[in-house]
Amino acid sequence: MSKGKRVLIVDDDEASLFILTKMLNENGYEVEVANDGLTALQYIDREPPCLVLLDLGLPKVKGEEVLKRIRKKRDRVLLPIVVITLKKDEDNVVECLEMGANDYLTKPVNVDIALARIEMHLEMSTLKQS
Image 1 (cartoon, one colour):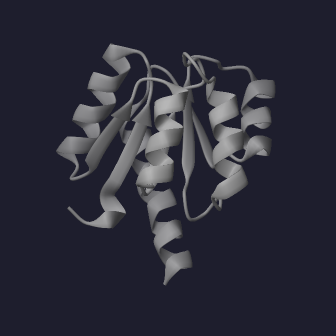
Image 2 (spheres, helix red, strand yellow):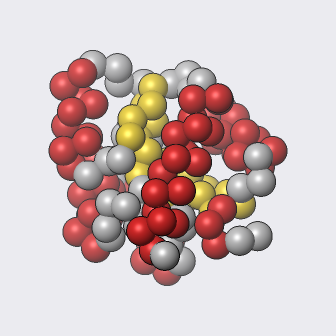
């Protein structure tokens, strides 16, 4: 699998993990999974993916804190982060974008929209690296 197709899903909800993993696998992506924020941070330090799908409501280290910690070390374009959450209010969207998220999707995730946004962010990242 090419480096440009590795996605880390950070979510503690088994149903969401199943749906997102299936969607990405069916579209040629290699998927890694972290069920909590601490595991996600350790994984990213060890083997950075090409994109992170990040839920906010995580055990151990909340999604917002994971986002802040990643942004201290990793560029917004080189490691895109798409927040995926149940929170739909506009203030939360703005807050996440200001903290360094590249995009924001609400659950239940629309598969076509999610794929289009993931592909767009990966293309932008690839362009910056070339």
